[in-house]
Length: 133
Image (cartoon, rainbow, N blue to C red; front, top):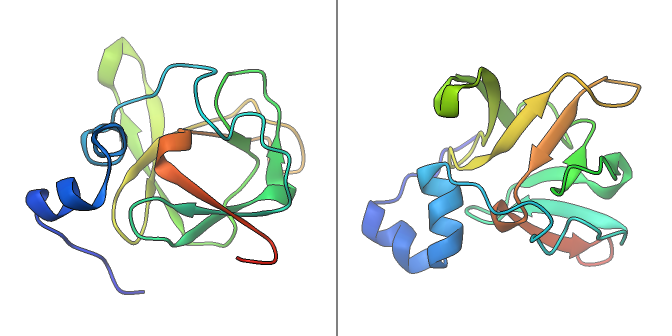
């Protein structure tokens, strides 16, 4: 897979200020504020930074956390996981493997079959209905 590498200036032109804060500065949107938290449509969630398909709506569920939650990425290798000890917590950060954009975090409290909860910022995603995906 080819990696997408842009300069800070190119990223700032490509993304909104809010998207830049989340994807490039590892920010977090407020809980329950994201446009995809309650999205129930059938389709694919792509990275807002590079358009790589990251998550499928079939793996999305309502975790009650205030962020879109998925049990797994759409395919192996699409999301990388990194240790994160920011904000006085030990967590696992989820990043897009193509552009290294911050997506959110992975927690071990999800439903079967994986037991994982990929807790993802709506600002890091771009949803495409199945017919358009």
